[in-house]
Length: 271
Image (cartoon, rainbow, N blue to C red; front, side):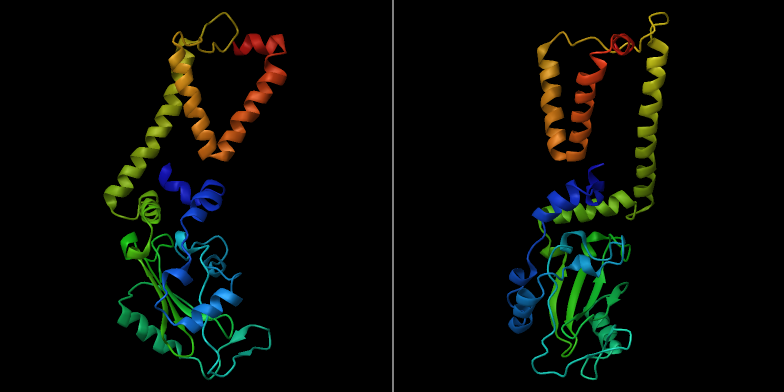
């Protein structure tokens, strides 16, 4: 369950991901300053998530909110736009074949190549375990290349990930069953365990339910105060970590207060 938090809309994208995305233009200070300064001042709205196509996660999870650097056009010709308004590479742009050779020389084998989308755009070579390009998260790599000079502006590897980013990257591979056949088998067994708990819980209640009272026989109140206090603290922590789950709990409590505790027939059935 924890390994699937990367896909969670609130917990993953709004909370954890935002805390663990690092600002690339500060991390790689030894890269060409002119390009990185342009990226910081004019390209704040362009992030790695903008390079994804739809819901497909083609760029690493921990880079999605980080800005993308820009190619330096100060000493190069300007690119043009096609008749449809789409960006077309200019005569000053490095050829795609050269970028492919660059990727091979950098050690890429299976990867995606993103073309520049503007006259300040960059070539991006990405091998990402979350996208299925590779299976080992430790081989994650994202490289941005200046479209005019062919220089590497940014090279993000596993060693650049924060501790939590590494944990989530490995968690994604485990969650998807990418690492090995054993990984797939364990995932199947894990899913079957949840099915077993759900079915066995319903059967246990059915076998032990009172036959004549007409109620679902809710469990009695705990005799020891420490039990429900521990449960309450756990519930509060879960609600804080998973806001939508907390909203569901609060909704049930409000429904119980407004309806179930006031309608005697419902109260008798649920008691």
